[in-house]
Image 1 (cartoon, one colour):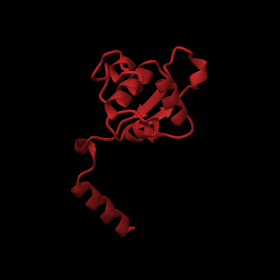
Image 2 (tube, helix red, strand yellow):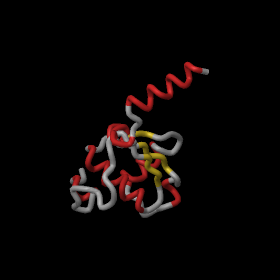
Image 3 (cartoon, helix red, strand yellow):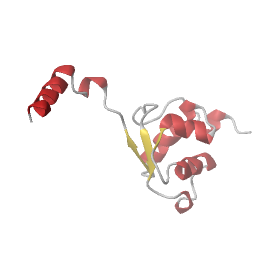
Length: 109
């Protein structure tokens, strides 16, 4: 059994941007094209090859702790192997007033 800190090269958090648990991960390359990947990273690419999965789903399906999965996904993102779609922060979502105006406009049609 490999210690978790060995999988993450001793890091407790990703080097790049913070990945939300509901951020969607989609593989851009196949694991066999990069032989430098760890088995865990190859597993993540296989899981996300055909469909986008959330970070939480990737962690669960790969059998990894969530923080370890975040670090490995961030490494794959930095290497250009995956694309990550972050959710919209609550401050960027439309407020109730805008939604009411849109609804009123649709009803007027």
